[in-house]
Length: 236
Image 1 (cartoon, one colour):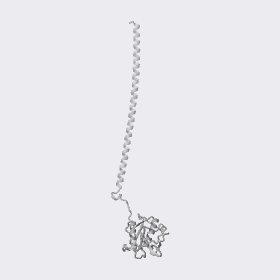
Image 2 (cartoon, rainbow, N blue to C red; image 1 turned 30 degrees about the vertical axis):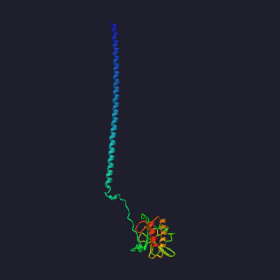
Image 3 (cartoon, rainbow, N blue to C red; image 1 turned 180 degrees about the vertical axis):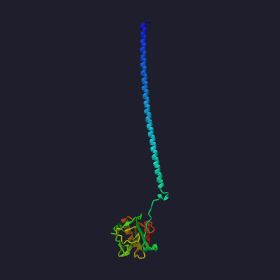
Image 4 (tube, rainbow, N blue to C red; image 1 turned 60 degrees about the vertical axis):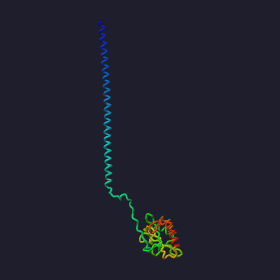
């Protein structure tokens, strides 16, 4: 190999080495950039994970506080509720006193007929309601303060108040109220018991319809058709 050829060989080798060094440097630069990007991405992911984890811990703590508050409320509710079985028992007012006319006291039930007119819940009847019902019924106040009904100038039956003192003298007053009525016939003083009984049934029907009442026997049992039939047979 002559000197000229040798020089060209050296030049080519030098060029190839330079190109190799340049390409190797570019490759190393790309590796460093990729490594940096991957590291940055992992840091972002790790950071987001840390934030989510902190949020989860805070939410768990908040939920625990809420549960603790609810438990405290339940404890307070339990602590202020008296330990008594009658707390679940509905409250009922006692039945009011039912007045019995003195004309019927201590007498045999065979000597009179008595029916009670009232609401099933003992709701009071006002004076205005009584006045409206009595207005067209033909009932009149007698000297004893009872309402009475007469036909052909004969006394058929009388009506007393179920509320003490039993008088209806002031039924037209605004402050008047009564639990109901006691319609009764004194059989010992009645000239025609059958006519009196039928007249009383008729007026009772009118009062029941007008005031939306129910009819009871003195035993506080509801009056039935069978009871009326028995009385009619007894009086015939």
